[in-house]
Amino acid sequence: MQLTKQQEDLLNGAKGETLAKVMKTLVMYGQAFDATRMVEVSSQYNHLVTSFGLGVMKPVYELMDTLLKEGVRSNQKFTVDPRPLDPNVPTSFLQDLIFKHFMYSKQDFYEKQLNELGLLEKDAFTCTCYMSEVGNTPKKGEVLSWSESSAVVYANSVLGARCNRNSGIIDIMGSIVGYVPYFGLLTDEGRKADWIVKIETSKKPEAQLLGSAIGMKVMEDVPYVVGLDKWLGKELNEEACTYLKDFGAATASNGAVGLYHIENLTPEAVEAGRSLLKENVKEYVIDDAELQRVYNSYPVVWKNADAKPKLCFMGCPHMSLQQLKDWTEKIETQLDKYSHDKVLIPTVFTAAPAVIAKFRETDYYPRLQKTGVILSYICPLMFMNNPLCAKMPVITSSNKLRTYTTSRYYTDEEILMQLCR
Ligand code: F3S
Image: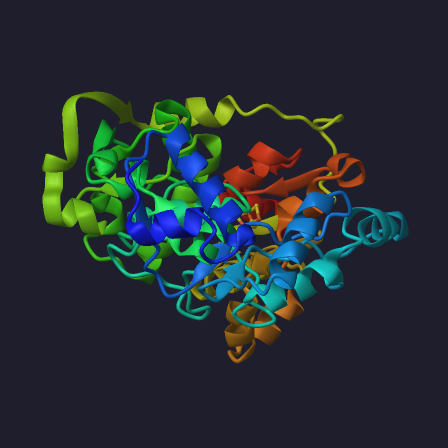
């Protein structure tokens, strides 16, 4: 790998042994992917994936401690993925005990470390850091050191920033030295599409199902999607961005997509069009039958497939302000139609603390409260990943949550009916 004089000096310890080790880790990471050089991280803020103070993550706390003792700080302020716990979310006594005393016993300690290292502000915990209410929105062409897969795919595809699907801790390291290895989605060639995906559905496809279908087909490749602008339009407005947030998270979790192009809509597709297609591109056609096939292929991992759901989680990735408003209206209308006052299943909507704060300023907030829906800032996946919650019949319209937990996927429409009818 070709390093600049400055990078060589860093590697050789000119700024201390700790920074040299961080640089060495990044160089080795780059070598594993045949990176040719290191490039500067150029975004204003970073985003970290490791948000949870799991008791067993001792090496992480030790690493952070070493960095802090040596006076090393992140070059950029950063946001972090959502917190795992929130007293607003209903829990049993046993769950509470396990969460606080066994699983996330180091949460306060770890948040203190994050704060010292460069946390943007005390509630900067969300996976949708790119939303305007949160303010960590990279610009087109900026190089990032992020690793949260749903945020990476959004930043690359919708914002046109450049970021690989890094891992936790590597994300901090890139920000500390200010460089990341140049390979994959950072390069022009790596951003070209291996697949052309043709959307031929008779109605607007469910974002989460479409993302899942594409993710499972193309895996880590780059898809160029045609025909979706028929349903989303040609402008990246709030509705289209919200759709692409959920679509992208499904491609990134049901597969390993880090970048997609939507013809006539996402910035690089608008700029370069089909010149983004590689030679010998593969083709995947998605129609109604294909989406149904994908839906039918999801396994139901509940012990009793007919169990009555005990909890419903919506908002993985975190919901946008518009989604919160739309869902408030949809639930109100359906409750009214079926003569119910409150949702029939305990339901949690999750969103960024900053989005929740904005939502509280609107008259939708008391209306949502009236329906019985709970609003929270947690990560539902962190909440569910333990033997106690894994046994619970939980429903969701998030394909990411379905993939990583025992929760069961339903479309938005089906969820709405279960909550209200
Ligand atoms: Fe966000 Fe947690 Fe889902 S980080 S994307 S809410 S798994």
